[in-house]
Image 1: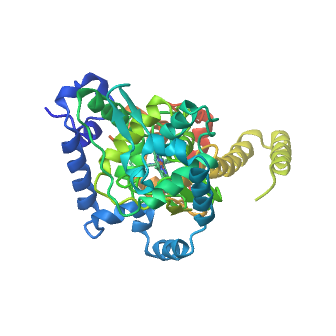
Image 2 (image 1 turned 180 degrees about the horizontal axis):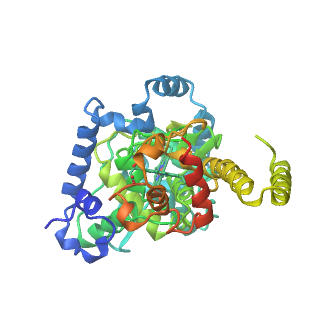
Length: 276
Length: 124
């Protein structure tokens, strides 16, 4: 039997993904079922609109959000990111090429040599340390601003993550397992909030769909008053689940990002996105 | 709502006076009233039950709608112990793939706390 996301979801956590051979698993089928699931759940939401997250589920909030995106509070941060690029331009061009519009869309990707998932933020710091520059701090500040600048330059291109080896499949599977496995005091999983209950309210917050989760990263949050990385958000959700978060830019979150981005393949990059 | 120390004092007073006059009856009634009030606090508190995250409950503000509204609990659970078991998370009362936490099983709430929440919900 092909092990897909929905099979994993319906079988539940008892049959953990570990027991499944990567060879038996077809990420593309997982993705198709995932897209079909959201289509069946909300037939009126267009595929590409999943890049707009939770705002799809509430017309009033969608209007407020569109107004916020017209005079986006994150433009200063993008400018700061551009200045960072210009400052060490030679170094970055050596790592990422000369076309700033083509960087965001390369990541996340599976590096067959190191057998690891590479993320944009991870590679920015790798690039800096290789050039004997000080790495940025993870999660916010310079790293998020530079990442935000590169996302902004890439707007309109589609997420296009490739899985071309057994090892890459394994990384995808590890991310999927983290996504569906109930954890913590409440026995919650990411999937419970962002798949099954997407569109419902947890107190005042509407739970957004996991489809499109990576389209608009790093995100600007009104709560943060700044840009923050996807892994910063992962950490926040893990804490809300009363789970000890994994390490930012560690293997677990990198695999999770790889899985989430693959599942969002085909959705246009619209980062950085404004969120509450 | 009365402030905690004040309420505590009143309860203690009520209980001591009750003890002197009519021990059993008055104590039980008074105890139940304070259980209901404490149950409400536990159910609404974000760090304890946080039931409002998922359920509409009369008297609570900005509820979520992940679970059903908690109303007419006596009709839904004619046996009080069934309601306790549901909140505690006894296996026979859990619904597959439900987000409803197993509050007793996971140790988030003590049995005494769940009993107070049951007393509160049973009035709704």
